[in-house]
Structures are given as C-alpha cells and as structure tokens.
Image 1 (tube, one colour):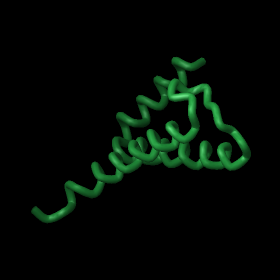
Image 2: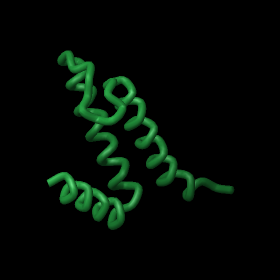
Image 3: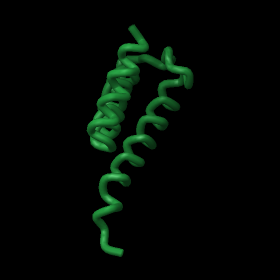
Length: 75
C-alpha cells in the first residue's frame, strides 16, 4: 500500500509541480499541527519528534512557494 501512495504522490508532483508539493506540505503541516495540539509528541515518521516534522514540512512549503514566486519576480 505504501508504494502505491508514494507512486501517486510522485505522479501528482510530476504533473502539477510545485503546486502539488506546496499542497501536500500544507496538508501535512495542518495535520501535524492539529495532532500536536491534541497531545501527539512522537511520530512514525523517520524524524520522530513532531516539532521536527513540522519544521521539515514548513521548509518544504517555503521552498515550493519560492519555486512558484521567484520566476515571476523582475530581475
């Protein structure tokens, strides 16, 4: 099942680029933020600590947002 999910996420990221990456990162931040507020401190994610997971997803969201905005700025 995990490989199917990974393949689907990769396909969406390939099709929609930075928009898909930004959307998944924001969804992840929102989910972990809600879970952290409910008392979750450990994650099944490799990073384990939910604060680290939130920071990681936040950095991904910032990178995706920068990838969407920077090409449109005047040089």
